Every structure is written in structure tokens, then in C-alpha cells.
Amino acid sequence: MTQDSLPEFVRLTGVILILDVVESVRLMEVDESGYIQRWQRFVREIREEVLPEFSGRIHKSTGDGLLIEFRTPAQAVQAAFGLLRTCAAINAELRQDDHMRLRIAAHVAQFVVDEYDIYGCGINLAHRLLQLATPGEVCISATFRSLLDENTPARVVDCGMHQLRHVREPVRVYKVQPAGSDAGPGGPLLQAGATSAPAACVAA
Image (cartoon, rainbow, N blue to C red; front, side, top):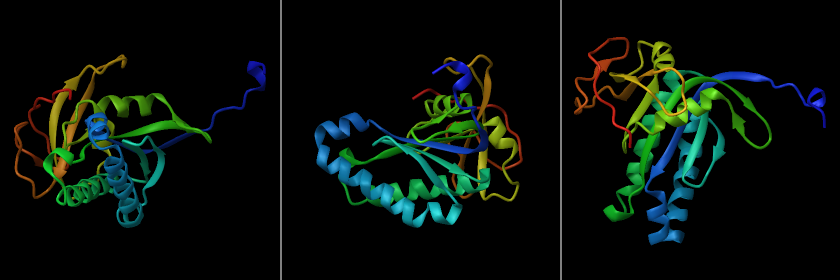
């Protein structure tokens, strides 16, 4: 097949949320069947109870991670909190060593979708943001932050500029938490739309 005969890409723009399970390899090594059952339960419950409420669509599942598309940043943020709550409810029935600990990142990106996968520099950037999140955290890009509805019940903390691996230009990173959350070690949390002095984000 020649280059000229290849199909032309159709680029879409959407809100992309990526999550993964921290130490999933360890969890599977300790109890493969148990981990798979917990993961399948998590995916089933969020598909039935969380994603429909916020118009989320799963594009990809890797067995320890998900890539989900949303229509708006506000929907993605609220869904992210729902994902964490669902995971916490499952963990409440388990020994602490068996807990699934999620980390989440979100970005507004252009991408290409085919029958096999979802592609694009924006998808890669979202994966790099995920590396900055610690268990239970949601990291977002500056683009995502700028489009977040001011009425979203969330608090945002500015983590400053970060040079992400294989990303040419430094990017500004934020963390987002439910509005009722206490301020964490990164500094005071603010209502969406406010600004703060940059706080440190540490690569996980």
C-alpha cells in the first residue's frame, strides 16, 4: 500500500480522562484471580453507575487502566470523583494490601480513533500528566483548567510548570479535588476559577 492510498485521518477534539491502578503488577502477582475480579467489578460498576450520568465513553481498557472520553471538563471532573468513590467502596471490603489505588489525569486533546486504538500527541500528554498524580489524585492540564466551568463543585491547586518526558515545551499542571476537601500538602485549594501560588507536583 502506497502513502497516497492510506486513508486520511479524521481528527476529533474531546475531553480525555486516563486512569491507572498503582502497583497493579504487585497486586496481580499476589492474587491474580482476586485482582482481575476486583478490576472487572470496578469497570462494571462505573459503566453502570458513573459514566452514564456524566456522558462518559470508554475508548480503551488495559486491565489496569482506562481511557475515557467526556463532552465537557466539568463532566470529566465529576466523573473522576465518582471513579475514586467507587474504588474506595470496593477497597472498604478488602485488606489494605489488596486495595486498588487509582491515579487520574485529564486533558482536552485532539485525537484520531480507529477500530484498534486512540492516537495523538494530546493522548500522549495526558499519559505524561498521569505520571505526576499520586494515588487518589486527579491532575489536569492548563487547557483543561481554562475550560472548566466556574460553577463546577471542585477546588483547584496550581502545581506550576513541568517539563514532561518527550514533550517539547513545559506545561502548567493543576490538581483538582472535591470542593469539600481539606487543603493538601501542595498548598491551599481554591474554587475553580481562582489562582494560587504554584505548589509542587512530584512524579509518581
